[in-house]
Image 1 (cartoon, rainbow, N blue to C red):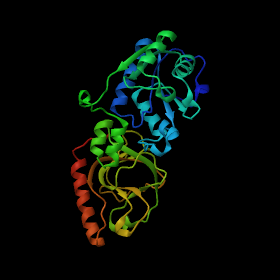
Image 2 (cartoon, rainbow, N blue to C red; image 1 turned 180 degrees about the vertical axis):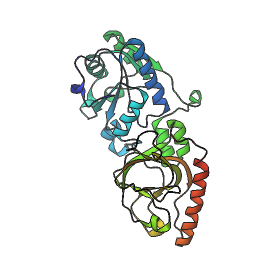
Image 3 (tube, one colour; image 1 turned 135 degrees about the horizontal axis):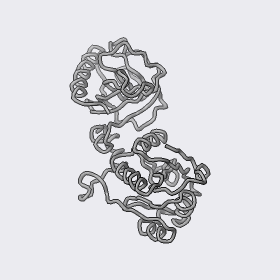
Image 4 (tube, helix red, strand yellow; image 1 turned 90 degrees about the vertical axis):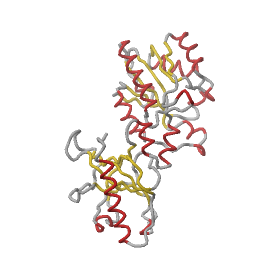
Length: 323
């Protein structure tokens, strides 16, 4: 997949494209329906399927105090877009100056002159241009002037006719509440947080449950504090490698039993004490919430609960094929 970080990166001899635009935070099932349609329309027209996205999130620039927590980092988002089959992604730096473009200026400069769009695929609630003054009707009018077709998709999601649809807002709320199973239904896959394995306090090893601690610069929205069943994915190993995707008990929190203060994501790979993961880039995937984070009165009580957590994780994960 080609990655363009501004209009100047777009090749001059690009040829025709089929385009969509959005923030695509999470690249959830609703996004994937739109993107799949873009890929299909592009194949039918012998064109390149292109997604246009923004970084940072427009609300973070225009209304910083209301900025939503990002479900994905930009790099995670681009990898997810590539997995859908998009041929190229244009990442536009969103600034206050950019936000002053009229709908006509944005469409002409980006879709027409830079991308040579022959078709644009959007959801029916798409807005663009200064103060979100452009809508689907505006886009159709501009398409008639500039020679591209506009394909509009209805709301997508379970119970969409009753107002329920897959959205980044809903996804974010489920994760922040710890409802990772509901989040997975929206995503079509488990939510993941990626990072490098670093040294922690080594308490887990002392207790018989060595954990892989993710670095504080991890990517992806961390769900609510608690203990989860999940997977640890070793991103440096080839797909299908025996130890690439491993069942894990995942802890999110500050280790209150030990009066910790730093919020951490750590994963114990079930029944494995032989792994040396330090320095590896890994993903932690969240499958099911087991319990909230608790402060235990004694180490023995904590270890007893950890043993129960591992049993529950094994039961849950043994019935699931990892993503």
